[in-house]
Image 1 (cartoon, rainbow, N blue to C red):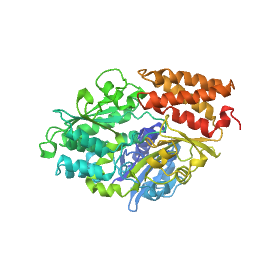
Image 2 (image 1 turned 30 degrees about the vertical axis):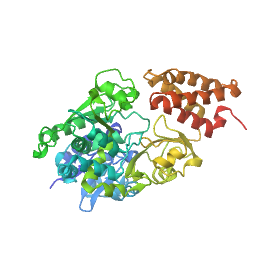
Image 3 (image 1 turned 60 degrees about the vertical axis):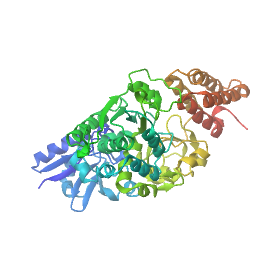
Length: 512
């Protein structure tokens, strides 16, 4: 009887040598005449332990990591295929503290299954949500999503049920489901992990969305920098089609939904939904004026649902277990769970899925283990390059949308980038303006010109030039960007700039 060994195919693990480890394990097993079945699973999200090798035993899956090429022969010497003790032994995977304390709903299968095995997906509760959805009317599906309290996980946090209901009742012979998979925010990788490590859950979520609003065609707009996700998604889509989970007659129901992956060209602005639609239509990625909203006139002028990967990947469990089940996680108006991503100067970087409500401090220290350098954490940026910089005095803020809004911050996509006490916050503010200038689509003046002037003003401040004049000028410019920009790129650039200025004035040469 063969022994099942798991080595992740996730791109983070691959970048750390997982492909070489997998090949070495197969070679060593063959040399020793040990019959193994090698499964390329997804990553568990414990990136500091990658490549993480697991073996199936009678007690459960035993983990070893981080494994290097030189460790492979010693693992076999230690009888790791039977769960033997080794210096890299981590015990039962499910008992690792970082994982054990999580509440994985959207990521329930990630790291457990072979991502492109439909049989694996089905044997781990896959397509149960779609089976239930096929028995419901569109209105009943939308009600389940509305009752769940699910809000957009891409940044704006708009209630998903309201958006779907608008598209459901919008007139139109053709409607579309568009997945925004242009995950461009710094420190974010949860979308990538879903697409690489559990692509069927996104496909199922989009299919349910199609049934809910009467859309028969879906598109995944994927950032070009994700080749592993592109491969996994297309493989999974082909298998879903072949098995009747996509196509013109889904599981014999007479209902249709087809799905394609389209690659972007590397523009950050195409993470904004209307720029994405322009790009998807084959045009330059420029922001559209609103109204009309995409829910009324979106892709090719038709009613369109646009949600990000995590929003759509959260739908199957809602339709499987019910809106009330999902709503029981979280706090206030922030319901369910959010995959939080720890990056930057952090000891234990990786993905943590938890219900809304824990504090930043718990996340940074109980999960993240503090800074990688061992120095005090001075600031964290939450919500990507347009998110506010939060000082240590705000680390006890609960992780939920309203609590962050109350301190003039954004939770966004849940990406958290950590900085220790060596960071220069004036330089970080300058970078924010520079980022906006480089990535601006150029359609509106505040963003196109204001960001360049903002970078120049910050550089003058950093050089100590006329602080009494330039600091108020920077604040006035930020007010123009905040209130005059067409989209969130210009409209949110003041968040990192002003938070750095307000919380770390000494880095700008401001005293007293």
